[in-house]
Each structure stands twice: as C-alpha cells, then as structure tokens.
Image (tube, rainbow, N blue to C red):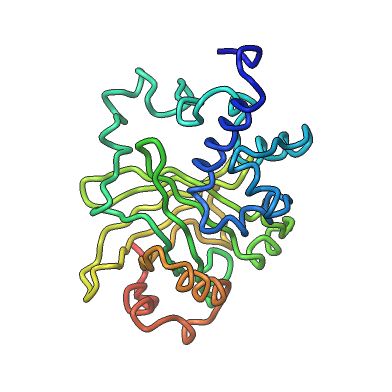
Length: 265
C-alpha cells in the first residue's frame, strides 16, 4: 500500500505504532526524547498517533533509529527483513536462526554492569553499563563508551559518538557478541560464559578488539558481566559509577573473577 492509499490518520497511527515498537529498546521515554532532541510531550503525541512530526524532525527520528520513511506505511518489524542480516541464504547452514535465537535463560534481557582492564593503561580498569534487548527474534546489546576512552582516542565525547550496538549469538558454552560504534569500520568481539554464583547472575569471558598489534596497547582482556535485571534505579546507580577506576575500587566479586594478577590465556 502506498502513502496515496492511506489517510492522514492512518499514517499517524502507523508512525505511532512503529515508534512505540522502537521505543521498547530504551529504558525510558524521557531519556529517548532527550536523545532525539524532541519535547517529551510532543513525542508522546507522536507515540499516540495524535500528531505528525515536521519533515526535519521525521528525518532526525529516521536517522536515529536507522530506518527510513517506510515507517509511515508498514510495521517496522517488516522493514529491513532483507538480505542485510544473517538470514541470507548463503549463511543459512552456518549462522542460522538457531544461532541468533538466544534464550532468555541463557542470557537474560536487561541491564548489565561490566568490568575489564583498560586496553590503553594496564593500571586502570573500566566499569560500564550495557543494555541487552530482544527484537524480531534477535538479541542485541547497546551501551556507551566512557568519555575518558574517547578522549584517549582523540574522538568527540557526545552520546551519539559514544554509543555502540551489537548482535548477540548463541554458542555451545555461553554467548558471543560483535559490537561497533556508529559508522565504525572496527568492532569488538566478546565471548561470555555463565559463572557459578549465589544469584547465578555473572558471566565471565573476554573482549577482543579488531586492530593490528602494537607495543603500547592490548587487544584482548578478561571481562565480567553482572546482570542487574530491568530495574532502572539499579541501572542508574551503576551508571553513576561508570568510567575508569583503579584495582582497589572494583567490586570485590568483579575483582575476583577478573583475576588481575593472572595473565589472560
């Protein structure tokens, strides 16, 4: 169906339904509105199908969510189900739906606090927060680089530059993920397996960067993930402690699992 076949109300309703679907990946509408640069009240009207954004605002929304104007015509779940993803027949017997279908029991959705040693300074550690979500049968991960890390690399510190996203894939023992910043031509690869703990909410593994070998930085470091659940207040508390820290500042169980005195093998 083309836009000529739909009334203004139908276009608004389709946009609203698609925006509600896309907004599910974000912890709050207020935070999403700020990232979009759209007034919260006005954005709620878009979500409800009561109002339609100006062309420049619509372009900003499409750019942010990496979609196109088809969000006015079709459910967003049907947009992009093309040969750009792992469903391409060429990979079907190698990276099939079974690989991208990661059960909640294996790697639950929600917020995770992570810690690892810095790639650039072996005396420093990084503590951060990521969000794991599920859309259209796939599991994705989203987070933000620490501002200090981008400063070291000479990059801007705005949230758009700091943001990274990736795909989670099921493995025989745990999960793997590949993540990258927007428009980047390098990425990082992570492998995690569940660690025995009282609440069964820790994963341990490693993260590797896709860069050439140098004598000044590391490419692989041990990594710890701690599942915090979906409680936004816990996530915000963890976010306030994100950034660089020293070994003594790490949470005790994170420090134990990172085994900082042992070389990574």
